[in-house]
Length: 525
Image 1 (cartoon, rainbow, N blue to C red):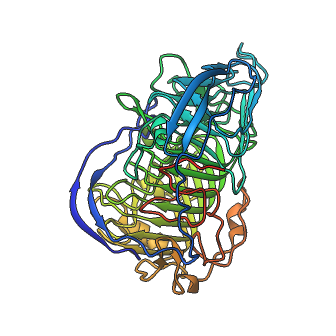
Image 2: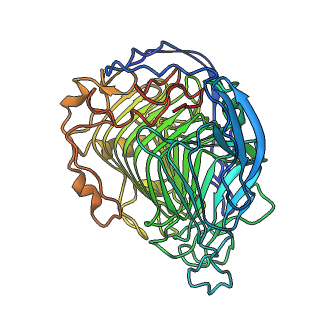
Image 3: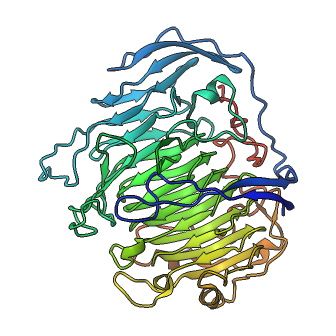
C-alpha cells in the first residue's frame, strides 16, 4: 500500500451542479489540502506511460464538410499544430466526426445535440423528437475553447462516441492542447451531459409524482432549460465506449458545477463502458435518476466524489478503479436517494462489484464510501483502502431500514476487504457505525481490518487474492445489469488482468501502464 503522511488539511466546500439537497439542487461537500505521498512502485506489468511526442503533428488541410462545422484556424502545443474545426452550438442534423490526422474538433459554450424532445416519447407533451445522433470516431479529440463549454445530449437524441482499446475518444480542455495542463489542473471546462427519459425523483415541480412522466429535473447553471426525466425505463441516449474525459468541472454559477460525465434519467438502452474521468474539479461522474450500467471504469483525481449516484438512480458498476489525487477529494463514492423525501420512489439502488477504491486524502466530515438518504447499496468483491478516513460512513435510519416503499433492505457487503484510517471501518461518532458494522459482519468473507491489500497503487497482492469471491449472479436478481463472474475481489487481480491498459492515460499519481501516454499531453497516432 502507498504510504501516506498527513501534513496539512484545509477544509473547503465544493458545490455540485446538482448534488444532494432539496428538490431543485443537490450540494456535495468537497475538500482540499496538502498530503505528502510517496510515489508508487511502477505497475507489475512493467508498463510506463508512453513518452509524450513533441511537435510531430502538422495541421490538416481543411475541415470535413459537415453541417454547421466551421474552420476555426490553427492551434499549437507540444505535440504540434492542428487544424481546429468548430462544432455549432446547436446540432440539428445527425453527423459523424471522422478522425483526421492533424485535426481537432472544438466546442465553444453549450453545444446541444438535437433539441429536447420532452419527457414523453409519444410527443404527448407537445414536444417532438429531433432524432439527432452525434457520432464520434475512434481517435477523435474534442476540446473546449472556454471554461463554460459543455456538450449536452438532449432527450430524444443520441451520442455514439465509440473509441477502441488503442484509439480512445478524448474530451479535454484548451489548456491540455496547448500544454499548460498539469497533474494538479482541474475545472478547465464543463463536461459531457447525457439526458434521458427514465424515472427520477426530487421533481422540479413540487406537485409532480416522483418516477412518473410528470417528474423532471433541471440541469442547473444555464438560462435555457435543460431537462431530464420521464417514465421510459428502456430509453436510449446512445453509447459511450473507450472514452477519456479530462480536466472538467467548470463552475457555471454559484452552486453549479459540472463533472466529467453527468447522466440524467438515462434508460437501460443507453450503453457505457471503458470510461475514464481524469481530474474533474467536482465529481468524477454523477448519475441523477434513471438507469446506468457501466463496466471498466477509471476515476482519477476528482475534486469531490469519484462516483456520485442519487435521485432514484439504479446503477450497476463492475471493474472499477478509483484513485484520489494526493490531498484532494472527498468520498470515493457517495450514494443517496432523495434526502428529505427518503421514501420517494424509485429508491436509489446501487450494486458495485470488483472495485478498488484508493483514498489519498482526508476530509473532516467524509469517508472512503458514503451512503445516506435511504439508498439501497450492495458492494461485493471489492477493496477499500482509506488510510486517513474511516472506510464507510452511513447516515439516516432509512439507509439500514428493512421495510419501506421500494425497499431492498439494509446495506449489503459480500467479499469486501477494507484497510481503514480515521475512526476505523465504520464511523461511530456521527453516523450509523454500529449498525453498519453489524451488516458488514453478516458475511464471513468480509474483513474490516485487512492489511497488505494493494501494491503499485491498485494491483492486488497475494493476500488480497486469498479472499473468496462472491457469486455475482446473485447480484442480478430483479436487476437490469448483468455482472461478470470473477474469481477475485478488487478491480485488478494481477499483471495479466490489464483491462485498463491502452485506452487510458497516466499521471504522476496513477500509472495505468502502456497507453496513450501522459494525461497532460494529447495522444498522437
